[in-house]
Picture (spheres, rainbow, N blue to C red):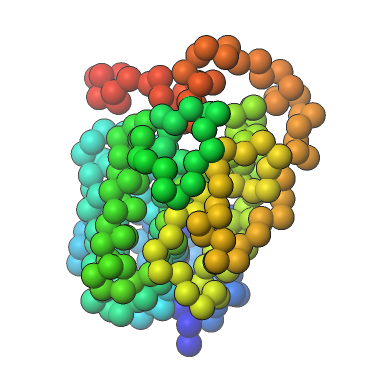
Length: 267
């Protein structure tokens, strides 16, 4: 019997994947720190704080593969990010090592490279230029995943997710939008292909405007089908006329690059 663990199942992306991945494996174990309600057919529901090592050890037990979306998903205090995104991702990988899980999809973020200019085409070898403490934490997760592959043979696809929402909302998100359908197909391909090793995949659909090149992970075999072009004439996109000299327009991380320290702005 195959069992998929989906962490972060209460978030916007996790909620969609909870639906689209249901039935793909015999059992999907969904987890979040928030209440996920009653288990659906083919589900196990486990509430878990990722910073609690013992709880994560129990969470991972009996699972074959992991889609790790869980953690703090936006900028916040260092203490919050430390528990959810630093301790949390370590606990997941250590539990995977102990319980023999051999393949993980780790939800990283485009904010790992947010301070690259929008004119720069990035690939998996582009240097880290995080635009936030959140981005820093995702860079840590990628390095940790690399370590667990080199030392313990746990394969990881680190997905630098762009803008995974129902539709793009401005010119920046037209370049980095990823549909839920394409993310679902990526997840399935990552776990169905014969070998992953350690790789970085930029999470974007087949958009006309693009900042990212996935040729270094092309051996995975994922081909996105959707495109942001279908929203090119939406009113929200058309009315967006950003200042070309503003950091929000200059950098790939958008407004994240111009925000101050979270602690200073939330005293």
